[in-house]
Image (cartoon, rainbow, N blue to C red):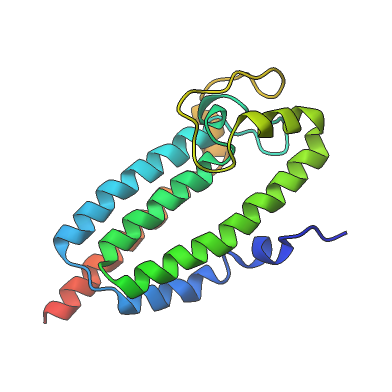
Length: 185
């Protein structure tokens, strides 16, 4: 049985590569935009790292730490990274393409994952979904029974390979510096 959103799960990364080429082509970075975008990106990287240290994929329903504020703190962190990238690129075309891609693909991915979690965790997930918003965070953490109760774990952060997001974002900033340097000549 194919769940809704399967296409988006399969193709979000594969289509991200040609998208990256297009948005880099239209980018008009300058050192200040790269610095500002990098600073915004650090917030997204921090949130992703914090969330990854709590997440036990395929093991338990994670409801503590940042997951007590939003059901998708990793994707919220990714959205902040996209915002940082858009600021760094300094291009309305690039920004529009990035935001459109994120909105289409990640809304479908979040709904697909929600269906999988509901099937796996049943009433516990339903209670969690009632208390914690899908994307935009609550101001105060929800207090729920069931699911995970552990705190942040550096080992879990490493197990989730979250360092790859940092490496990717640094590569993007370096590429934007090269583009700026090339266009100065």
